[in-house]
Image: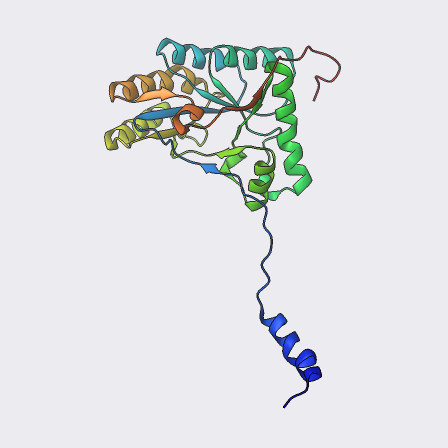
Length: 246
């Protein structure tokens, strides 16, 4: 019979080494690409706040529709502040597109948080909200980005239809893309558009609104069409001071 010392010295270590090590993983943020409510369409607009925001909002409001705006870059200058306030005051969802539109999947943990935090801080000061949705620039993310977003209480918002307005499509091509999409009549749509494009605001959007509503779709915010809260918190906006700078 083998001695107890042999068991302790040889067999037990072997058992320990053969046991798989389970790493404790951090939570990953939810990634949203579609709506959950049938016949809902979320028209989303990236890269603002830009001068065409007013016309985008007016087109939506006139059709009793709600849009979702993903803001990025410095939004502390007077004109940008007015545009952010305008979008929010007219009932649209305001969300984060990070601070400097970098590919988050290439950044360090600290830099990812910094990109998110700066926008959250600015929106808290300007309109008193902390967004619950963040759209990663270029739709690019990895598990590190999802972990950071989860810690910050945010959902990653992507899309399932791209109008192509930022990748070279002409207005006619974007309209044709919407027409083909509507002909397939998916249950829901999350559409990617860019408010920085004049033709999107003045040609493609009015066409899309008309055709989508004609097909029986309800045009709502991304929060409404997913059944998720738009904001983590809502409070009184701040007053401009020396901290309102880039």
